[in-house]
Each structure stands twice: as C-alpha cells, then as structure tokens.
Amino acid sequence: MITWIQTNLQKHFRALFVVILFVTIVAFVFMPAGGPGGESNDLKFYDTDLSTQASRSEFFDGAQLSAYIQLNGMRMPQNSMEQYAFNRATALHLANEHKIPTPTKDQLKDFIQTLPMFQGPNGEFSATKYSLFIDQVESAGGFSKSNISKVLGEEWRIQKVYDALSGPSFVQADEVIELLKSDKTEWSVATAELDLASYEPEIDMSVEKLQEYYDTNSFRYATPIRRIISYAAFNPSNYLDEIEVPAEALQVYFSENESNYTKPNPDTEAEAEEKTLPQTFEEAKEQVTFDYKMEQGKTVAQEKAQDIILSIIDKEAGYNSADFKTILAVSNAELQTTAPFAQTETPIGTSWSPTTASTAFELTETRYYSDPILEGDLALVLFLESEIESEIPDFYSVQDDIGRDYRLEELRRLQVSYGEELQATLSEASTTLDDFKAAATEAGLETKTFEKFTRLQPAEGLSPSIAYSLSSLSVGDVTPMTIQGDNGMLTYVMNKETPEIATEGEEFDTSKQALMANYERYVVSQYISELANEELIRSGIINSNG
Image 1 (cartoon, rainbow, N blue to C red):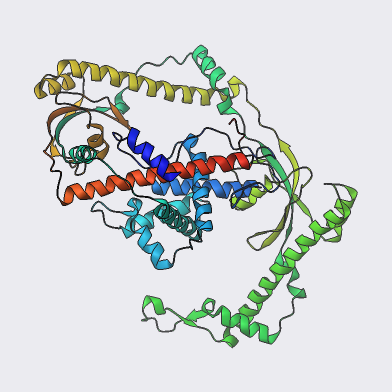
Image 2: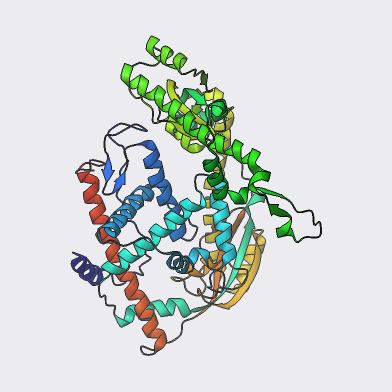
C-alpha cells in the first residue's frame, strides 16, 4: 500500500513543495453513541478509550498540544484538529503493535532538542525557550509537567513509527533545483506600512444592521449547558481520633518523608541552601504523627465515600429518594449544593480542579453519582441535581455584545478591502521604486527598504513570512496587504537575483535527501490517515457515508 501511494504521489505531484502535515482532512463531527458529553459503552478507537467525557478531553487535549509543538507554535484549524487527533492515535496504535517502548530520559532529551519549537535563532536548542514553553502550558491549566512529558514521549514514539514505515523515495533533479532556487534567491524589497489603529472607517451601527447580524449569528450567544451539583464531602481530619499509630509505622513514615521535616539553622551566616537543618525523629514526632494520621484519614474518607456509592447501588436508591436520604444520614454526610456552572467553569465558592468539574458533566439521570474523588484533602461524591439547558438570549439582552462583535468583523472586512484598494493603487503607480515610495507616502504609509536577503536568511526587522510570500513574484510586483495586529504591510519587489544551481555537490545532495525525506513522510501520513478512517468507521464514530 505504501509503495503504491508513494509511486503515484511522485508521478502526479512532483511539482509540489511538500509541507509535512500529519493530517488529511475528513470532515466529521465526533459524536459518541451516548450523545454530547455523555457516556458510551466501551467506545474505543484502537487502543484509546473514548467512553467518557474525561477520556475524550484527555484525548483531544493531548492532540492539541502535539499539534502546537509540531507546528512550531502555530494553531491548527479546528476543522483539521479532529482528524489530526485520530491520525495521532493510529500512529500510537502502530507503535504499540510494533512494541516501540517509551523513550529513556536521554532519548527524550535528545529528541526534544531536535524540535524546531525549542530552537533559538541559531538553530541550536534553547533551554530558555523550552522552559518558557513549559511555564506557559502549565499556567494555561490542564497540563502538568508529567502530562507534557507524556505527550513528548508519545511524539518520540510516533517519530519511530514514521522512521519504520518510510520506504525508499526518489526525486528529479529539477525539483531539487527549484527548491534550491527558492532558498537562495536574493531579494531586495520596499515595504509600505499602515497603522491600522489609526484607520477608522465609518461603520453602520444601526439597530437594523445589528439585528441582521444577530439573526445570522444568534447561535454565538447561546448560553452553555449548566449543571447544579450536590456533593458530599468527607474530611480526613474528622477521623483522626479513629486512627491508630503503631510506633514502627510512624518510624517508616518518617524515613520515607524525612526531607519534609527541617528546623532553622542557628548559623545565620550559612549559605542559602543551608538555612535549614534536618530534624531528628524525636524532634519532629508531633508533626510526623499528625501527618501520618492525615494520610490514613484520607483513606478512611475515601472508604466512607465508597460506602455511600455501594449503598446507593445496593438499594437502587434514586436521587433524593427516602433510601438516598437514609444512606446519607447513616454516613453522617451532609449535602452541599453548587451554584450553576458550565463544563469549562469551576463552581463559584469551590476550589475544584478542572477534572472534578468535568466529572460532574459525565453524570447521567441513571448514573447520577460519581466515583469517590480526592479533591485536596477531601473525598467527594458528586450527585447530579439538575441541568439548565442552553438557550439563545433575545436580541436586546446581548445587544452590547452583538455591537462589539459586529463592529470587529466589519472593521476586519473593511481593512481587507482597503488593503486591496491600496495594492491596486500602488501596483498601478509603481513603475519604479521612487514611484512606489511617492504613492505610498501620498496614501499615508511609512516606507522602508530591505536589501539582499533570502528566505533562509531574512533581513533584520522584516517578518520571515514576507520572505516566503515573495516566491512567485517578479520585479515591480506589489504583494497584497498582510495584517499582523494593528499593522498592515504591502511589499514592492525592487530586485530579484536567482543564482545558477549546480546539479552536483554537497549542497545539491543534501537538499535532495531533505526533499526525499519529505516525500517519505507524506506517504506515511497518507497511509496512517487511511487506517484512521477505516477505524473511525469500524468503531462507529463515523458512518461509512460520512
């Protein structure tokens, strides 16, 4: 199969410069049998469990982080993200089938240093960029260092799958020549920049226009589904008097956690790392005893929570039934109730983790109780009390939001339209560099020049994306306006020098090998996409017509 795809790809698509993406887009909406956010009995995609909302969230969160890393910080469009996630799971399934192990620490470290995401301007690994990435992902929530390490380890295994499946490839000399010409062409350009913050077109903000926008986009203002959750909390501190403390067990606990017990160093001149000294067992005994009892108390609290669930199952007790109330009374459990909250929110007045909040949305009318959840020191059991359906508010209650959104979209549309007008004006007027500068100045644009750069070595102060956008242009051409933040830029090609390319030598051979590797990876991507789509149909996630 791989050989067939590869042969046909090379016959019919040789002119393409292949940018490797791990995705072939197949449009579908992931909807398990249990419905949105619901349970689905034993729903699996190869080795990946997708039976619960929590497992599906973990599945897609891992894929999103993977895509962010592989695309060097760029965001993948949502309509491509689903297929990317399933392709990635397919590659991990192949890794399992071929018994590719998780990487060692040294292997993972070496792999991370090869990723463009973590390389500095000189192409070398940047520990600063890597640390900043870890901090940013952690602070965004949902990922710990261990989660990030797990995803990176999976990326290493996926790379090994690609290496194992890649077969021999071939390219023609003219393809390599075109690639080298694109890389080595020397450009000189002038830019005309527009401060879009000062561009204030007149926008019709009449009620009629806003109503028209609302009628088309009312779904954007729908309130999310919210739930009210009752819960029983078991605090381990309530059970400390029940905990026996064997002397031997206490000594073992102290030995395992000795680094937690320190005292101030009386030597005030000591180095920073020596400001504290270890305590002896006798010195720390009171605190050790309390900590040990708290650890045991957590176990008791979880057992109490589990007892409630087992009693509900045994009695087949419905929520708020007489049996349900009796079970709570026997357990000395007092129900607390949250304010309404959406799946992406944490209930006001709680410090629940996103995982606990997400678990609340896995509950159903028949399975209205959760398994015991350890939240901080507390053991919780959640109960589904009620659900508030999504609704679309009337126009007047969200008119301010509509006005803001409509104005922003209209502004963007008018900016693009204005950019097209500027491009036409400058293109018509610009037979020389001086003409371009004069026309740009008359239009209120600031001009700059950048000389003798390539797309691999862009000019200082010029966005690298500009160098890549020039490849099909000729001297005298003006690019469409690119918009970055509040800055719009049009580029005039002053000069273009394309060198002669030798078909022999180290540079040619290196580029040929790189292009062959691109072909190989593309072919493997197609094969993995085919396997993924077959499994999507087999598992019932999409139908054979979808």
